[in-house]
Length: 473
Image (spheres, rainbow, N blue to C red):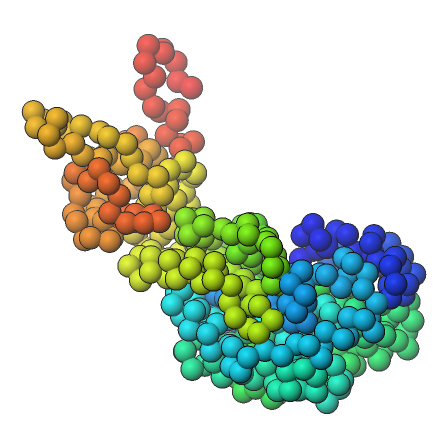
């Protein structure tokens, strides 16, 4: 995952423990480059231009899908201390390798993941084929440190691929370039022979993944420490990937621009025209962490979905299965609740367009063409109706300042109830709403406009009449 995460900032600082001397010797200069400091070479730009020719076609499904499931699962799940336990605790490699014999998941655990992803409204999945610990969850001829020859005794990636396809979900592979287990994984930084061996090993594993599992939709690289894109031979790497999987999309974490950017644990839209995907945990850990109970609520997830869609991005939300492959019950409950909400409100999310809308303390926004969707998270308080029955028939009112252009109609997406509205140059006012919210975790109001809707408080503010104020502000 991204080096902006707090645990990643500890890399090499705590690695002075047994089994880490090689990494410590690599020195501080071996730390990975922040994405913002990566320099594109002419070769990288040429590779990106070749991929750009087919990018729109390759990514069409992805832009429609919007929501995916990330799965972090490996040896670290056995001890239940999240995926960076090996590095954070400085575990010697021979000691850590023992976990491979004790990693014995139940048969076809991935079927439950895929069914949960579908129930949650997720349209694609991305599974860790190899994380930083170096253990391969797939069958490979290049190392015996793999699921077939160790505790599981079978190809876990193949089970995952078959499970995802059975539910009609797109298939993605996560692959960590960084490798704490391989003897050349750190010394390749300063030893050219080691670099050549390790790059050949890395390209070989990726070739197997791109060859042995049928059509793969996403390749999700991670952590290019300790080499530059030139040292990784990343252009050659991507050329091989696209030769074997012409329809695949790749991210930007092998040092090349790739097809999409990958903000981690925060939502940060890329510039218009650049695809991006926020990856995020359901609690505070990627891998299974037995006592991490900092679960995001369905309300938070639904709000994040809207924020991501408003910025034109995708949302890749992680589960960390237990050692036997079971999904933690809290993850199941949260995702099923989100899925139930999407069953009703999916049209306000899937395939939506980037939306130019300011903040709203009580709500969020998404857009499809000339339709604005108001995601009302905090329902308005008691607002009496403007007639003599107001004492007996109170109503709620939603008001939105700075909306342009003209509104044609409005309705509650959950119930289909048409809403009365008034609009002037400063605000839209929706009336006749019930006192209690019709939906949860958020109620979506569909507003049809006669042009592309925008919400701009700054444009409204100088024109807004101020009580007893004689000048514009």
